[in-house]
Length: 180
Image 1 (cartoon, rainbow, N blue to C red):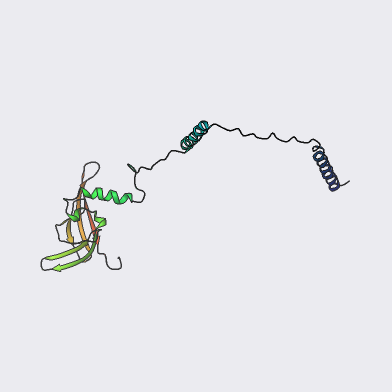
Image 2 (image 1 turned 135 degrees about the vertical axis):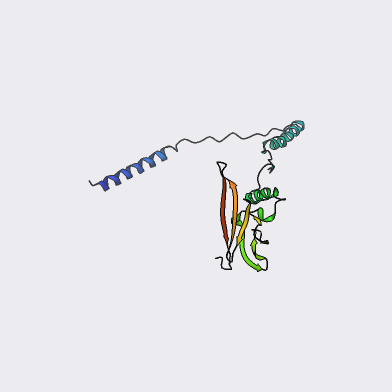
């Protein structure tokens, strides 16, 4: 015998055994279930049972929970926007050009007059100002030392981490229409 014929004969034998077991189990007759008899309930007990049902239904409902946003940050408001307002609120008495770092201020033009050069600068909010030599500019207490055709030179004095006085000379290049 081959493997295929052995498998086939085993499958036929199993099917025959299951059929015989299924037919042999039906010889017993089942008894009919007992009929349900409904008894009349007095009216007082029926009313009490009905009153108890709504109370149970109300007790089974989950409690209602309300969301309270108190003390939580609004996810739809930028956290950066709120911090900048708070940081700039303490600078109300500081002149506009001293409220920003030198990197935030743009040099946009030069006007030459009889008394010398006037530089045109713009703050991050888009407001324009004119500066001359000696004007204080930037948060670091910088002072404009020289104005040329293409640059403004600013001198800043500050204390480093060791307490030593440091002088830093920086320049702001002219911003043309192409951004160069």
